[in-house]
Amino acid sequence: MDWKEGQGPVQVPGQEVAQDVAGAAGEASGPIPAGLEALYGACRSIYPDQPNPLQVTALVKYWLGGPDPLDYISMYANPGDAKLNIPPHWHYISFGCSDLHGDGRVHEQTGPENPSGFGFELTMRLKREEGEKNPPTWPAAIMQGLAKYVFQSESMLCVGDHVSWHCPLDNSESRVQHMLMGEDPQLGTVSTPNGSVQFVQIVGITTEELRATQHWNGVGVIDIIKRLPGAGGPWMLTDMRRGESIYELDPSVAEEVENGIENDGSNLSGVSARLAWTEDEASSLPPLTSQPPRSETDADSEPSPRISHVESEQIRNTLQKGLLQGANKTGIGHNLQDEKGISEGDVEGNVPTTDSAELFVTQRLESLHLTINLESGCLLPLALRGRLKHGRHFTFKSVVDVSAVTLVPPSVAGAFVDASCPYASRGPWLQVFIPDDLLPTMVEDLADLADPDEVTLPATFRWPNRKLAITVVAEEM
Image 1: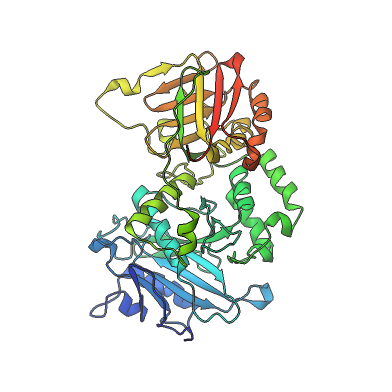
Image 2: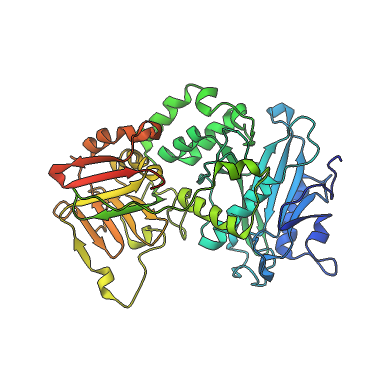
């Protein structure tokens, strides 16, 4: 059956394909809510010939107790632009991260001068395969998964943020296994009666591009993707059949990224991790616990993602491992290039407030042995070279509890560690002071971590004269 407006042969489990946007809004007996109507209006300005696009809608709305935060996801057929070398594609647009209703049923009412709800909606542009009549629904499932993380963590997704997904987005054999956030080139930011809404576009990226994002910054990588048609082009299309990374499409990109890291550093202020520490730098730590990963057999057996209650928790755990934290609530990917100091607010989740003052007593450690999982440990070169070298701190936040480890250079103010007391904890928050004379040595000693495939685990790195050791362990112990 050919794809037509308002109809389609496929569904996402737990959701249904609506016949038209007015019916999907559930407002047949009354006007469409003002916030939702403003977003529909923005879509109509781009697709005047598609007033009733195929739309996935939650069977039970979130505000009625349903599991899916996005009320609707519209799927448009975009013809592309031959003059700009933009091929035909499917355009997915979410409705629900912003305040659609304006009556407090989901989001706090903030007024037209402030961001609406979380201040954004998600979009995605998927290259349309030749002869493809119906839009795949797996992007809608991913959007619901991302929205669940946003609602559960109260984190915002901003342009330049990334999500390390560690699996082909469509469960194929594709190299496109992670996501980067850009601004939708056609929708941009719109004003609604409930506040402003930015349309943040999901862009599928390769592992090599993820590493460039982590070591440099997401906005820089987005700019490179925009100028390379094979990587996405100016409208940042996701092509699941893309076989080449930005480095292979344009060899000069490697030098550009390297210069960016050297000159600008990284704007990533931290990452979620599995970690543990002890005061005895020579001791052996117990294995780190981990969440059970999704098996390859499970992935192969499902033709598209299934967003069940159980898998929503698995998605949340995956996102916690990859989403990076900064300011603005958790401020994922926020550019902290001008930061001057550190406070408890810099740690996502913060040190919890309790009635026990002992939690906030600073305890000095005479020595330190830190153990960290491989994926997060491989970001140590980034933390040292891209952050501390440029006078910025970097935090590893535990995914299993409220503990955190922050690496601190001498120029950062507000820390409770210094040259005379390089290792100290305050409750579950550990700070590690890295002096200028130790930094180059650590960068050199940890250089092999930049290529995780070359690391034999467990790997322990020691600096005896500093009474410091770091052990990197496998993801599964």
